[in-house]
Amino acid sequence: MEETEAPQGQELEAAGDSEQENAERETVLDVYIEEAGYEAGDRRITNISFQVQQGQLLGLIGPNGAGKSTTIKTLLGLLKHAKAQVKLGGANKSYAYVPEQPVFYEDLTLWEHLDLAAAAYGLSYETFEATAEKLLSQFGMEQVRNDLPAGFSKGMKQKMMLMLGFLVQPDIYIVDEPFIGLDPRATKDFLRLLEAERRRGAGVLMSTHVLDTAEKICDSFVLISGGRMTATGTLEDIRAQAGLPEASLFDCFDELT
Image (cartoon, rainbow, N blue to C red; front, side, top):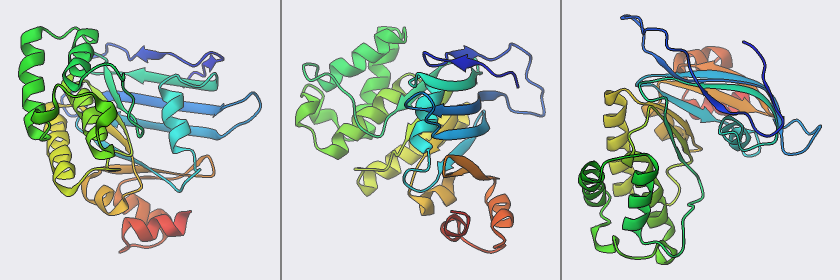
């Protein structure tokens, strides 16, 4: 893969328009990071590469400080000091990013945040209104639709971030630690919506520490430790690389990190 230097943060470039083969799912995210860091000469991650296909849920896992957040920031083009190439595929070559820490405008209500996101993505008002109403109901947020998110609990703020992502129905979701702050009901609603989006054909890259849930829902994994990839593939692949043929993802994680 051709290397692309990105002193100001690399751009998310559209993948080629080659036709999808009947027997294969289209790649909606193709990532190669030669190196990246927060300062010149400070390489936090090196040689990170993976793809996400339509309908696939790829789990990005690793211990604290391993480089998961740096990987996500790099592929989003948020780091100045990066040599990386990122390609988007899918019908619209679009993505939605759900951050670990909620980001919002203090003077906008929940509904106004949804309206603003819909306008930014060019959704018709009819489509926006129908989708937003459905999401408010699914996440139990109808009663706070006209409230300012500054007064929300951490879990409610996280719900808002998830709603903003699901609103636009992109080709690829990039989700960073989605389970933090969610109660069991909200977690179940999130997973149900995520599964529906995968059936629609969206891919998902999800960074998480919740390994028991990841083991159940992810198709494959990228394990990062010390800024490098230490294992990749399905759970069976990870078990083979750990030398633990019957182990849980948690035990393989412990062995490989």
